[in-house]
Image (cartoon, rainbow, N blue to C red; front, side, top):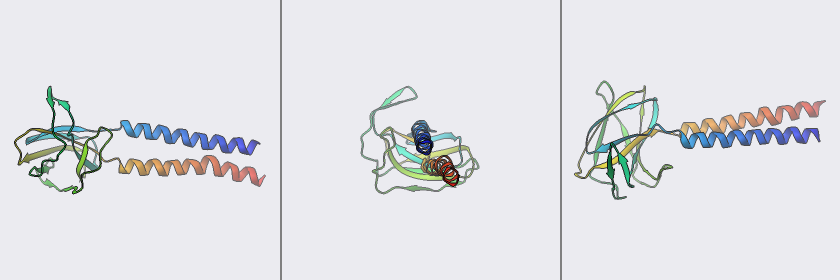
Length: 166
């Protein structure tokens, strides 16, 4: 009975950690909004992989309401530059079907070596549209999965192993 309680407690603790991690992941957002077309500067707080989203739904930004259509503007050209003015290569997604938790459509991704200012230059359309950049959550998901697996090993298997040996 004692072994069963230890095992169940360990599994329960791991499950609780996993749920808390998912909730934290949902609220983790370094979302920086910007309007296209035009010239904008934003500051990224983290290095690594970032994602570009098209915020097609009704949104408010800098005191203005934006009601933009869901169709992505095909003629839109976006260029990104780092603090030194060097171009940042971004990869546009051809199939626009991934949405974030707010319903924004992922249109591309890029990577930066260090946090700092990023300049966004956009052209090719007349109507103002709202976009955002946020830190990619792919790395966070793998960290959560491996941490969860490690906790299961530590909390469940090691005590069970020593309990069975004695």
